[in-house]
Image: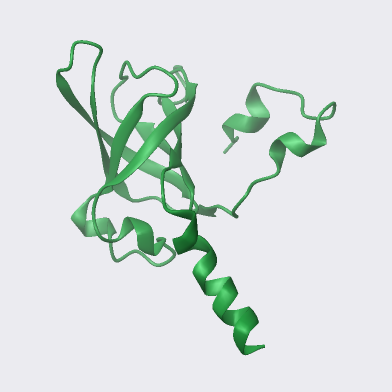
Length: 136
């Protein structure tokens, strides 16, 4: 399986481009995206996750959708997947606001993909390391 970040760009000129703020884990669980289109009409799409971190996710759409870059969406793991091992705690309890920051068009060999940046409170992400430092 090829990852989208290796399919479309040569990162040798910019080695920092593949660095991530948080490590991603390959995890395939059903999820749902909800957003409002340019007319204000509520839309939704069923997706499946490919990988997830505390602050981001890459999902593939069951059918192509028209979501522009930087659109805010509600991202929610479906109930059967909320108990999956490795799922970040921020995604276990319901909807999370996210921004679409990359769109991989659908091709005959691959579904349409969306990279999402989860809009989670950074304080929630740094609490655990701070507690570890305090006890060390």
